Length: 77
Image (cartoon, rainbow, N blue to C red; front, side):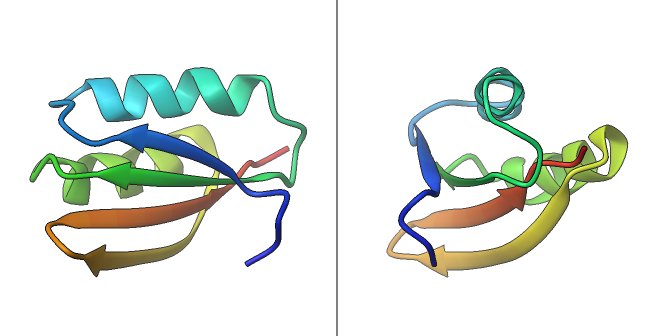
């Protein structure tokens, strides 16, 4: 993972806040930039991939860490 990856800490936030915050953060990033999202909302497992598909972003990875998920998204252009 490169050092230019932005991290969005959405831990403790419930749907739809993790996706809304991700959308806002991605707006300020250039196309091709990556964003790491930390989320513990059970709905994020469905919401984040759906958001990526709808918005034209690439979901690079999705993994589980201690009690939360980590999503890495590449901004579409």
